[in-house]
Amino acid sequence: MKKATDKIYIVKYSEGSYEDYRENIIFATINKSTATKYVTRYNKILKKWKEYYSQFEEIKSGINWIKYEFINTKYNRWYFLRKLNKCFYEKVEIR
Image 1 (tube, rainbow, N blue to C red):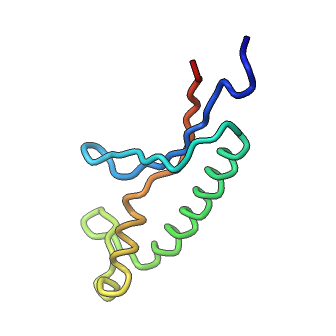
Image 2: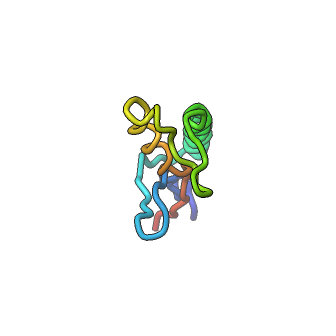
């Protein structure tokens, strides 16, 4: 007989791509609504900050890169945000 707690939702975010792709676990919960709310909030904040830091970019050889005048002040945070992907949750059944 299945119970309501037969599933755990693991909330993760990913970063990088190809050979440096990695998924990081943030937390696990038995509440689907908690996982959904967290993922929605995380992705909304990530989108906001990526849009903000895009004003410091320019296109060089078809690639978005930070403008020269902002390298000393904005580069570290811009680069950190650039490699972050979306947040998501994974449903795992308990045996």
